[in-house]
Image (cartoon, rainbow, N blue to C red; front, side, top):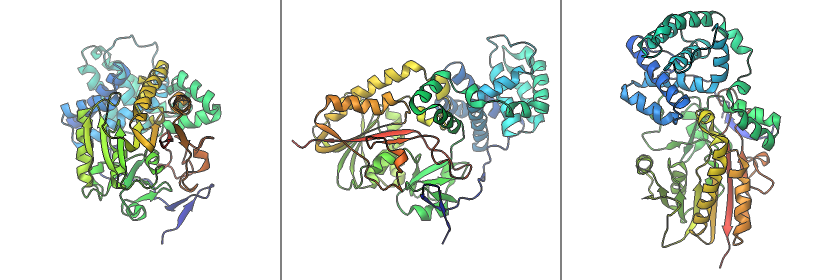
Length: 468
């Protein structure tokens, strides 16, 4: 029997995870020649779309990679470059500035993104200098606007490769990369020290978390991972998820350990009718269906629901699919469980989606809180007497969590809160609010080995409707 790992709270984590290893394909091993240039072009194109055009990374990266028909290894390397820049942009910019005699002019095409991508390769990914520098110069000279700066790019990057690592290590990446408004918000809500820990954890690359249908310990062993006390499995795998053992057999699905918690709060859902509003990408729909609930999954995106349906088929699970806007969805029958994973600022998922740092604005919090209030009112009318409304968001902002539920309960006297009833070894007291709701932070699981730490920031509350 494998030896258990016990943290300072006494939670048991199964066998100690192995040293973090990269499996084939290795995204940090750069492709060469023409493929290398294509991969770097995809990374730079995605960075330009996020940083200049303010477009979501996952969408633009998928389109750019498909347009260039990147092989899996090249695609992984391009993604690594882009996300490394997004997580370290502030400090990379600061180091680059020390090698420029004067600031670069504005509106120079993709020049800044080319420099950032090359700096990330040289200082953080540890790409061989000759490859990173020569291909960056090729990119620059191929750019219609920035081509006259090829010699400058070459000179700056050569100096950067020689002495940039020490300068980078001396910088405070959290303060240079995180937007001031978000750090100020978190400091007010969680205190300055905890806010910094949240930010640091948010800038780290996440591990792969999966939810299994059954026998988490056995699958943790098969996947070379660790079984978390919450029931999820955390893996050190880096590469194509589809190549992992059990994927094609439908034994599990990818889902952050925090995102898997809200449905667990419900307990046994076997035989219950369940409505999953805003259902895509479908992790919670799968949990409900695997638990034996009769599920109706609603989302306004037909494309996202199609992918949800494909995943359910792979898993051997079923749900009724409905393309509809949750704000106006209606049903002739009420449900035992209504799950509302509401649209939000997603500030708890920056470690998985670092583009949030550049796309979200302070005013988005109030706008999304207003939408959440509308969705909660709509969801409340779909809960049968004695049923449960489960509200959750992946935001760290209280307006989208604790304050949202307080306002809802003050207006809906027919609902009451049901505090968390799960054992402390599954959901520690630290993860529970004073009212008994769920609140996780990215800084949690810090006691695990490097490469296995962190958790998405999540909030969830269970509200029970009174019997008529």
